[in-house]
Length: 313
Image (cartoon, rainbow, N blue to C red; front, side, top):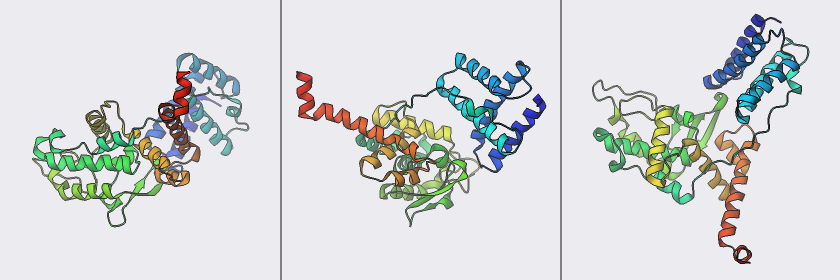
C-alpha cells in the first residue's frame, strides 16, 4: 500500500462521511486533519501500510506531545477509518482493533442554578442592548435566543441554522436539524413561545439600514439583516452571562447542559431528555445524573443536620 493509496482512501473515507453518514463539514474537517497527521507520520517513517506497529509508534509520538482528550479523539478517527477500510475490503485485517487509546477523565457539564438561569434569560432589555438604532428589536431577539438555548436545549449551530419555516408557534415546537443532519422535534415552553412571538413581530426592523436587506429564511438575524452565526451567538450568551449571573465565561452549551440538568431534577425521563437533546447515545445523557447527584451531595452537606453534626465533631 503506497502513500498515494492511503491518501486516496482517506479522501474516499471523508466523502463517505459527508455523503453517506451525513456528517457536518466541521466533523469531516476534523477527521481529515486527524488522518492527515497519521499519514504524514507514516510517510516520515517510510511505512508502506498502516499496521499495528505503525499505529502504536504514532500513538506514542502523540502521547508525548498532546493532552489525553486530543489523543483520544485522534485515535477514534483512525479507528473509524480502519473499520471503513475493512468493511470495504481494502484491508484484510483491522490493525486499529488492538490500538488502546488513553483514558480520558470526563468533566461534569457546567450548568447554572435555576435562579441564575432565569436571571440570564431575562436580562435582555433596551438598556442592555448596544445597538441603539434597533434596541427594542434586538432586545426581543436576544431574549428569544436565550429562551431557546435554555428552554429548548439547542446546540448553538442548531439555533443558528433555524429557519422561519421550522418554527410552529401553534404546536409549540421546533423542527431542528441536528448532528448527522438528523431532524427532531423539540418542544418549547410558554415563555419561549411568547419571546418568539415578540421577536417575530419586530424581526423586519433589523433589515440592513442602507440596503434594506433581510435574510428571508433565517429565524435570527443580525442588525444588518444577515443570519446570526454561531460566533455571534456565543458572544451574545457571554455578554448576558456576565450581566445576569456574573459569568463572563458562559457558553451556549452551558445553557444546553443547564436545560438537561433542570429537566432531570424536575423528574423528566432520561429517554425523553435524550430525544429532546438529540443525543445518539443514552450514555451521553446519563452524564446529567452525575451532575444532579453531585449537586444533591453539596446541598446535603450544607443543609442536613447529620452532615453538620459530623463536621462539628
